[in-house]
Image 1 (cartoon, chains in turn green, orange):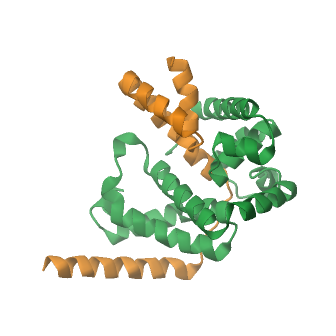
Image 2 (tube, rainbow over the protein chains, first blue to last red):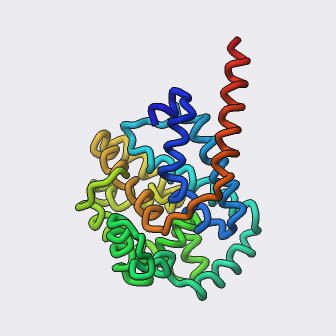
Length: 181
Length: 84
């Protein structure tokens, strides 16, 4: 990231090679459109290039910063593209077709899964489905707790509890992991 | 807000799932707890990255990188021209 801050194109090239697959996967999971995820990826790397000086190393690792940028831009794009009603309709369909964002990427199906990913997937898949679903609405759709409650028809208190318990379990699971994020 | 409560809330904060009124109370507590609070928030930011890393990577199209690097070179040239 230091090289990018010094405006070294080679540093950005390396950052691209290292993380573009992860960032595109996230954008694609949010917008569900291949062409849009490619557009977003380019916008995100341009933003990284233009605003790398805003990245404060003490506040966290570079990947965390890039993931935050990607998530924010992708959710903005999703909201601009579709009216809220359309999003709701689509989410309902997606939820029915694909109950878990991580489950269909199970480790057994992905022989190339890295050890790190395998551990992360196990943590996610270890959550009760209701907790995982609440987290997915928050993370991939950018919904607040009230929006999740309204969307699912589940009481707000229950949603708060599900998010709290689910996030705590994931957080506890990550504590033993040493990684770049 | 107790520190334990702050830790719970920090995860929601990082996820952006808080309501506005909750966020205001959280920001007050954040100032109150100072460095301890920042350390918790930083730890919670790992959650964001972890969710992304759990997805199967999707390599972009080959031409995408060339297009990006061309835009970067153009941007650099413009900056240099402005300075000159």
